[in-house]
Image 1 (cartoon, one colour):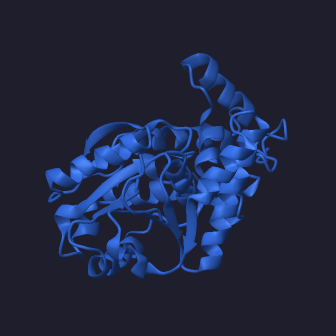
Image 2 (image 1 turned 30 degrees about the horizontal axis):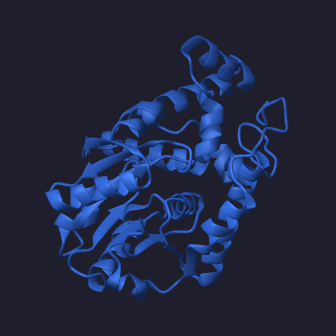
Length: 296
């Protein structure tokens, strides 16, 4: 059943996934970015994502047409003035998020729910720049949004119960299983997975084993569906590195210090599946095309 106006701010990979998920639930959504061209590029990314599912017989051309018809590009932040739900999905940068929420606070109606998608940042610190800290909440979705069934719902120090309930309803609208998390750097998923990914990268950098063998060991030995290096590529190496940098700044624990190999790949623009190259190489459909890692 269609619900009130929903806006996704940030038309990158995460924003695209969120917009696709909202539209797939039968609801219209505005996908917003700094320019309409960027938002339109985001919708093109959604179309490409759907094409991959069509290729795998997961969706049909009719599904594609219906999903895309419910997603509208925009760069006009004032469109948020009558929205019920605004979900921010810009890069993991505290200052940029705080700046955006400060603007939204002056635009959005008093009872609007403002959601930040973050895996490491403080909800309370973001909410502090607004006059409505009770209406700010975190929802940490994992990439790819349309395939990962989990979302972490994170209450800030002043998030009120009504806002939490609306976040739960939004999660259920997207058919996600949700867990409640007390605000703390890294929450549950990021805090646990980051050291594992970092250690796998160190093992590769030190020449202990190949990327393929590292991933195979974790799949066969511990029941992982995908290996840690493939997982990092799927998440986006720039995203993983930003998580690490935020966690080491907050917690000062060496296990979160980004592996030099990760920094090298990110600086080279090799960000994983989304750029076609990370620890492995990928085709336009996000499938592996090289039997060897790109770092060997």
